[in-house]
Image 1: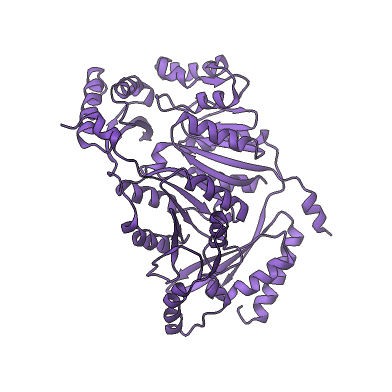
Image 2: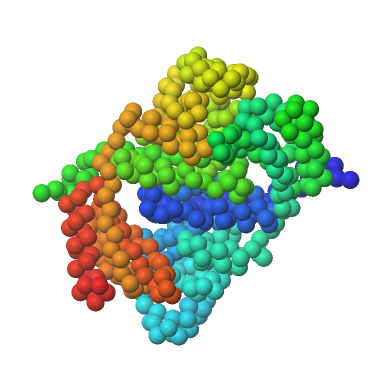
Length: 253
Length: 253
């Protein structure tokens, strides 16, 4: 039998995500990484607690990294590690951590054979992608072979979704993980304001099980999805049963 | 003839967006509002400079609102204004501005006839949606009739995209606007690292025209979109022409 104290004693592994890119803020590009990373982290028991989208501006990147890396177990970044002048994430990370940055021979050793096999020279622009802050571990990129990196608790990944995803897979075994977040969804074919009383009362009985309500409209009729979340399967089942009983007693399901 | 000084003297109207909701951070719900708001603001000449996604937590909402409302012309929020216990945006705003909050008779007057016409009573849960911080102006919601509000420079909107969008339309005439951001896109069928030198050199000649490069893969071949942005049509055309000339001279287009 699991008790509430088991849940509260458990260490929470938390994370923030910094999305770097003028193109997201200008509306030119739709971000596709936030939802993917949120879902991936939830499945491995890391709680995404904050996301910031910031422009390609060194001061803004440094400020976001330094504000978040002390507040959460991990900080992930996407974007700004390509070969062009606006790709300033690696240099911004070096500045945030006050460490030197230079072309990293480990990165060159990975990149060189792949460029050579395509008949391409490792020119200055490509070598720019091998700039890695001192002390960082590389994060493998089997798609385009220019690595991401992990500097202390900050994981720096590409912005292109297909490359970000393989980097996230590559770094996942190195991360500390909590218990995965579990959820139960109860669908009620009533507007949100009809179910809010039952939901609030059940929430008061189970303060450690966050309960959210998400209204929807289907075929012109209002409905509500009630979502209960916990890392503890037993507590979650008890809370869901209590909510169902209350909704039933009120004639809502 | 437009000169660089015309551009730099122009007042920049800036904005931040706070997306409020556990469901976005948990991966349960994909945000659909960021891209829409980014695009809308760009078209009316307001520069979206930062986005934060925060959980349904009063302290976190208050901290984000207070950090951003002094830094930008406007702050927009989405989410957390429904009828349930986790809808705490209005109360968090009142706390951030240190003003009282209560059921607002203007909001009740708008909501009442719509609920009555559907045979629904204005119960406690629904009245919760009429809680508006003192001093706020209402923002009309012709879809579901529960208003958003604008408190000083902070605009509070619903999280459901269809409702957020009509609130954004309703508040737009009240906003100060800058000159709309214009852009030119040049597509080069070469990998990003081939074009970075031409792009960097052109950027140095036109420091006021932000230039971004966005790699893509199509039919297995690497290409790059180069995007130049400015509020000044003449400067933008000059910069684009300079970039095209340089790409042509290097045999890239």
